[in-house]
Length: 196
Image (cartoon, rainbow, N blue to C red; front, side, top):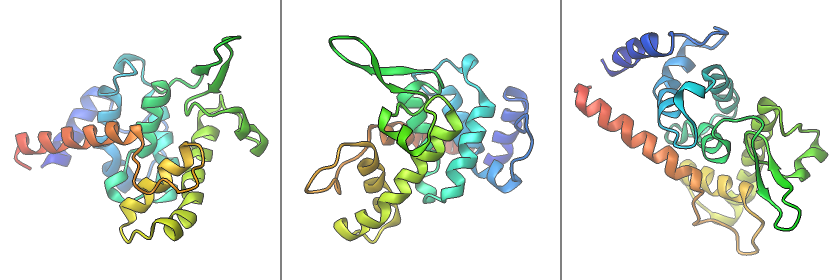
């Protein structure tokens, strides 16, 4: 029932299926509620200016890496927090010259360019960001010794976005996770209201 209600709402609000229409149906229904939350509940973006097709492209990038179900939407939460989904966002300005060090939808620094990443290309930047998180899983698993996939992914997430630390970042949480948890709470509340 909840999926049906969400589908109907998305048909009315978002125009239904994403415009490019090459999204797997199972992926579409798995991510539809979180995309809806990302569209309307990102405090760093106004819903009218959110490019929903870009959000669905980010979903496809995230789904390729297969994060745990509890962390579905992690890439959307990171893009929301870092740039409000703006591919040309600038941030982390130097104090003296006021030049932007972080650029693009994921607010990446210049070092990512040595891997051939164009920081202003949202799909390239997001793909690199997700792959960077996944690359951290092996070392995090060795260092943190978590059995839970969710905890491993969260530790890898933090490790990938923050400066390296000798003791590791096993018990830290990224700020993006707060946004994702808020969206998940909203979805839970909505499902209770609809009775599904």
